[in-house]
Length: 431
Image (cartoon, rainbow, N blue to C red):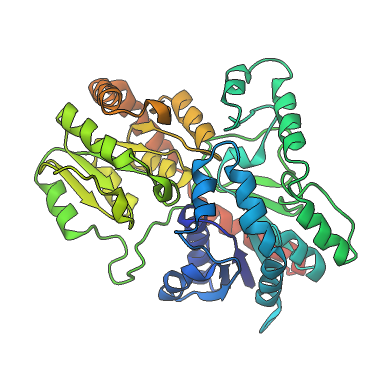
């Protein structure tokens, strides 16, 4: 089959899609990656077909930083000022990818591609959707942490609170998708279901690309939802050494005890603030070796002179680094969380927004993490918390137990099997 895989987001949103595309290609299918232009070098270096999708992603875009940093208004600004103004362009680009040079047999769409369901409806091409965390499915029976209303998280077990939280979320966001409704009116289409909560989920197949360790089925999830397990991919853009560590980092790891890794993933690193400065000071106060993954922004590099016990690197494939560290301090993004679980490492999570507070609470309940507020992320408190976790064997033991559970899952295989099955059903194939 010819299948177009599309989303708009950071590497954390894109890497699972790459993992699925590579397996589909291995099985003899033709995956086409419809993504922002910034990903073209990465995708084409893997031998995958690429189709540019607007809007492009500029890491220096202040709106994107606000999406990450502003808990109360960041998501709204990201939609209204970044995604929705380019909605018609996104639709046109995806329509082109889905119909030229040949009509696609199937679409696989991420939730931030709000033009995707519209393109599927207009073309009649069967489609599947995917989500990366339980937060995106917003169950009233397993209510998520709402970043603007953190106090509601403490009442999530009260009768009826989940339904009240879901109602509140729909009420607060009721005007946000007006640009989507406006485009549908222009095209002579009915308004349809709520784009933020309902229409983004395919009626054919919803792939929940996460482990049951993170969340399990709920009775109000969309029909045809399948939990696949995590889909891992974190290779460097350099195809010649996709999972190698930088030489100085490799040498650092070989010289001493496993360090503590400090990272902000692919999104929060754009709004790091004083995270790495505070992390370095905490590591020095505690007297532990540390790795700081600071990204490409030179402003993230700590200003003070660092001892030999602290190694700074812009990037490292988590699948290569995390198995060799003692624990990880991170922002709670689902991709980073998945790699920590896979490596069997305890976590200290400092969430920003979006799904991160909810992922953090789930990891705390799982017994593999502690959670610290950004306002409390100070060197003394981080040093105390990390020290206590390293001294308490139960965190490492529980993390290793969960890793063994994840080792029995194969998210990529399960997802690709489901996509092939959907293609057979919708194309009338008998084989």
